[in-house]
Image 1: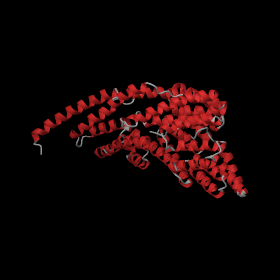
Image 2: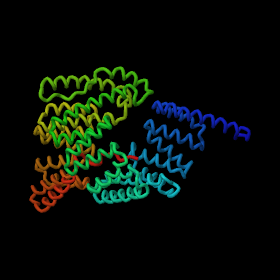
Image 3: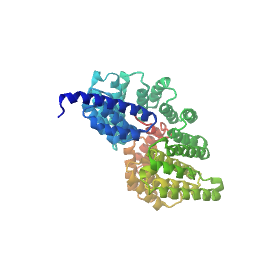
Image 4: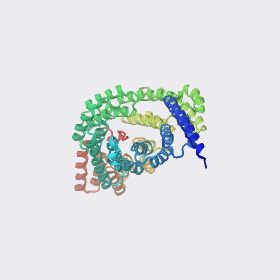
Length: 496
């Protein structure tokens, strides 16, 4: 027990400690050294009993260095220390919606902000925005159509409430527009988005959504112009580039789209080198050792289809040496190999698989196989890799093998509508009509806006002699295709 005279000393030493930790936060924060900052601030916890400011600083430093689950548990404590501060549950909701995808938790935190009512002041609309985004993401995750519809309706209501409270907020308008797009109210979504773009004309998400809406109206050239403009403003945005590839594929064919894939590989390489040089993580000594090794010889090139033999052989030998290099690093802690957020690696996988798809469209199966092999070198059991291996097997006429690969992919990702679609058609080709029908019914239940799945279901029903039901499916497919964007609207990130 401290005697009263010590109490004053304690207060002074606490003030001094807080001042030093604040200066540390500013200095290390500016240099992006969040890991070091979080370690320093964690030591401050011994002063921090009941001290909101220090708890909050530690929580924020954990958010910044990606320790999201720990950050949320700290923020929960901060809420107890200062229950009437809306910024704390908002920050927690942001982390739950973003990196953690803890949607029930996010809903609880958003409700705390809304529960403060008038007291939340200018943060009240943000509370409704957080809740609306949570419902919207829950709708995307839901597996039953009835549940999806109900959540989409709640999401739109909640986002519109946020809009009433903050009519000019471009972020709120953007997400109202996205929500309308998700339920295929394309022209209403377009009207809303025009409003958001008046305020923030070069926002990446708003321009991306505009391009997708144009593509849903089949104005592909408009869409491509917008995407090019957006990439000009945001040259490191892979999300925009994947949409550009799809638009080029529709408008100009696979050859042109492959050129963009090549550019994406170059960009990836640049960003990867940057992350290795410590742009993403400045404190790891292991990382420094890796940097020196990495700068040499990580050549990512797509095979050249016209010069099939030499191209593939050259590229394959590069691939082999690259994979060997990757394998030798697997003995290091995985966190160092997959350095730079995991996002960087999944992006590379997507680029290879996108290229594989374009080669398949040109019937260059050897090159497609090479690209799939590259992706498999990164994530051998990912559902996307298994699915593309299935597609390749199907093109080569190995139907049983394709069926097996689709089944494996579906085991890894039971909600994959694209996988269900391909598996359903494959089962139908192999004569398993009723099983095919079941798989395709699951697909349209899981994602009722997928026109390919409705089309497939119609074909299977027709083959079973159920003509009336088949016609209904074909009509639904036609109607949905008329409002279908080149990539799903759900690729626009929903984040606070």
